[in-house]
Length: 114
Length: 116
Image 1 (cartoon, chains in turn yellow, cyan):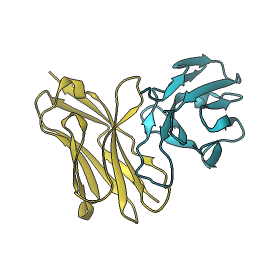
Image 2 (cartoon, chains in turn green, purple):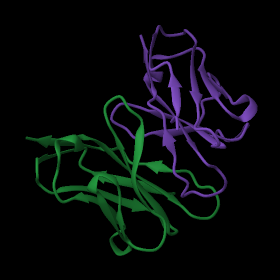
Image 3 (tube, one colour):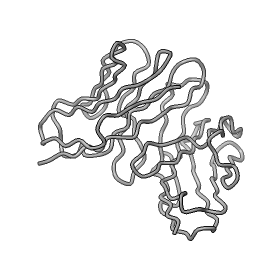
Image 4 (cartoon, chains in turn green, cyan):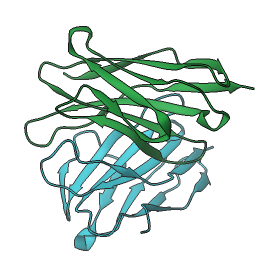
């Protein structure tokens, strides 16, 4: 069965510092991987996704993630945190081969300190 | 283009009462999802529709939960009777559909249910 593990339910960074949110997945077949962001009292919004091809994926708001098969990871990074990045971030996994359910991680709440 | 619209945004009820949530997906999206998001958790799928057909309802507690998507557009999720443990945010999402897992799901803002 597929699953995702997000390390750290809360992460705090200073404004302007590097953001690193960790995600490891478990899948017996090549995965599709997603990062979603959820602002308070809002639904989830897709930041970026990996399906096939280039392993470094760029998303919205300056975020990017790299698919590393050998490490079964899909960590989310941003070089310089902005106050507006404060939100909850969810990693999710699915896989190819017809319709497959998307499984979400438990989320990481990012706090940006001025 | 309007996004996924859900109503109400908030609902407070007493246990054993019924409650219903409504979702209008993005126009042209054939696939509709209902998720439940408990506090501090990620969304968990309750039911998925392809047009008007419920193709995955394996996680829907059928003793008290029901859903419908008449005419394959908007959808209603109902709980009757509600229990304390049903307190959560209920999210609706839609996607273009078809058997492509990489289809992007677009989420509504959710309905926050509090059962007292």
